[in-house]
Image (cartoon, rainbow, N blue to C red):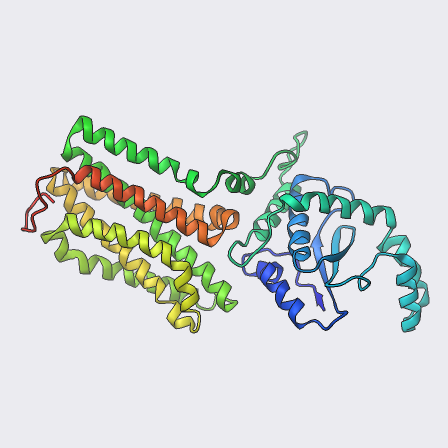
Length: 404
């Protein structure tokens, strides 16, 4: 089987380079069959460069995790020949020439190209040694962690982004994705822990009224991040389960926007009657949805339209936050103009941070499951901030006009 679809320039294209895809290939290959992965960007003389090596090692390690026997044809475009058992793929020139002659291929002169240009022994050994040494620390490309397309973009930036007299980008040191993966998901939520500490400090020094405004602002900010991050996770998961997304992306996003409007409309009455309790409930529901979005996607993968239900659910919980947080802040003495302007800015800023971090950084570095868990942790920090601001209080009366 020959895989020659070009470099993975997008998350969609990276599906042809995942562990799961290669397992499907291994399942359909006959005994003694081989896979050729062609058209992978390499370099004749610069394989050791950090960006180039990380990209090549990712694909090499992903293929090798399924096919233990692998041969690499070096050059500006690498070609990986892989098999499940020994004796199928080889870089031995004599064996390749013998196969060429046995098959009676023409023109006969091509058999001399094996040693001269295609598989020069010293270069094959050099490239395979570099890739094998890099393999233990290379990130595998998976459906739930599509990292290879970001590594390819790094290669392009590496070759195109050099200034005259300056070192090439990515020539030394680990990549940003590797740093994020090394930090771990819990520590990535530390900045929001600092925000929680700030809310607690305001509560202690400035009183309950000021703390409620700060906590509600934190809730709006994290909800903006929740909304766009949840939508990114839905889009990634949709593409993973169904193999495409561009045809239906307008419908997926449209359903999210419908959920936004519906969430704001449904919480209009709650914002007048019980904004405090309703706000806490929305925060809990957002954290729960984040934890459930990946397993729920698997359960709903029997139909793309059933899967799309996750999108309006995320939109509904996102739209529900703003009126509740605004009402709660107004009841505690904040000015309406200040609340509207500040919360709108925080909502959009959170959406920007959530979409950029989840789509470009977190999912490729730590995968869908850990990204969802991290975002759930962020919402837990937000919930804790509201609890610190609201309590201790004598009660949360349900009457209209109540400060809770």
